[in-house]
Image 1 (cartoon, rainbow, N blue to C red):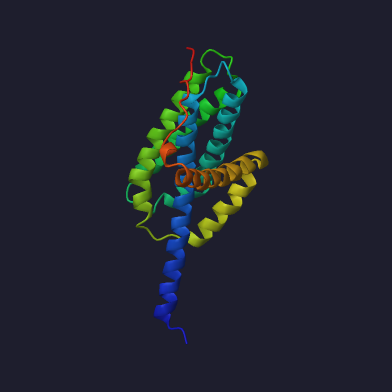
Image 2 (tube, one colour):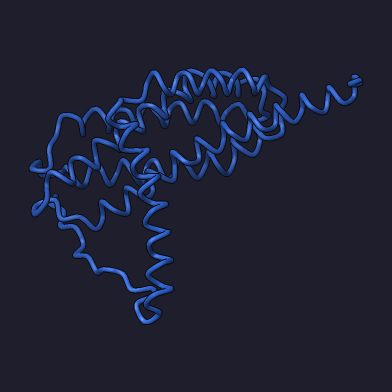
Length: 209
């Protein structure tokens, strides 16, 4: 027969699992932006404007969903729970600047003179925001008691509502494609040792403005 102590342990484990899922998914969002930014830096926006624009649009969609999840659910829960509430205020202000750049980029195309420059500024700004969030806010959240299970369920549901269907498909394809590429790379290395570690050299993106 379960005791009150064992029930409490189970509740704590469930809360910790929910908390870890929330923070892990947000960190995965951050990693996708970093990866997309690296890919963008290798692109030639003049030679292949369609691929360039598709990547930028995907990042804008994912950042919009990510920011809304944090603003609607995570930040209100963090406010009053973490020791340094100024971190929440600063994060919300940073989101305002991010959303301004997103709106500007949605009205632009790769032909615009400052398209690449504006996307670069957006990504650099997001990377700064990520450093503070993962380095300061998230560690404090890991130490507080919240209704993590309810928050996790709400964030999962809200993410599904906000994520554009096309963006969700691209995200799923990117994850599965990465796994396949890794498996194929391991197979190739086993078959051809001399070819291990070789990567295709790409021409750096030419950016105007």
